[in-house]
Image (tube, rainbow, N blue to C red; front, top):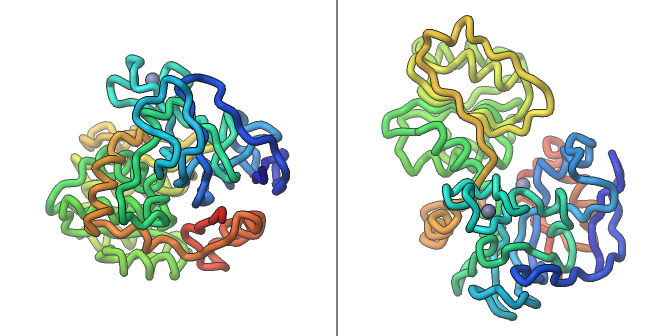
Length: 347
Ligand SMILES: [Zn+2]
Ligand SMILES: [Zn+2]
């Protein structure tokens, strides 16, 4: 089969690889129909993720059709159309029983396109298929569902749920990429009074306004904090969602959180960040971190099926699988290409 392979920092190739085989009775082999590229894949490409080694097929998002199932898979059969979760989980260990699938103790968690071969290929082996795949309802728009593999549950669980967004709250989302926009879409379940999105890209800020941001701040001048304080009568925001993963964006969140507020980190940080406890110790704040568990996927799937949330609005580009290297260069130059999510189709 053909697959997109990481070959060490800065190097990718679209090459021939052997088709995946069932290794464990709980595995399924899925023929990919649609996949996408994540900001996390770009982190791997930069060499930021040491667990992803040379030769790894990348990708942890996608939809497809079951090609083969192991003897212990009971929820799925050959021919079923499925959504692949970015998190694989046994569903049986102590952490899985707590709903913390991202820390599955039996070898699950974020493994696809990281420690095992991923979805940017014609076929993928999905471990713990019963708990890591979701049936696609009849009539679903499969491109929209690709947004449910990772970005929608990540924005919702790590940003909105951990940030405890409530009706009437003021919410700031620092970072208007796909994850920040997914937090923007799902924060609206709770009717916050204000959602202010911060980015340096006017195109992304325009998209944010279309998707429900009440205000936007372009931080190219580095003055996001002053502007945010001016917009909030110097109080700051009830919930500051960090959706970038660099020290300066976390610093904005620390500076703008109101007394009693929440900082919900989503970003993948590659460097330490200074926590300003000298200011925050008496500020009654809550700081949360999380790797997405994808426990909310069934609920999010229902909201997408009902049209309540329309993640398809995040799709800006389409490519055939054979052109996936070009898809990477488009997604890697997101600002110039005005790219949010790219859909890669395996015909
Ligand atoms: Zn992802
Ligand atoms: Zn587990």
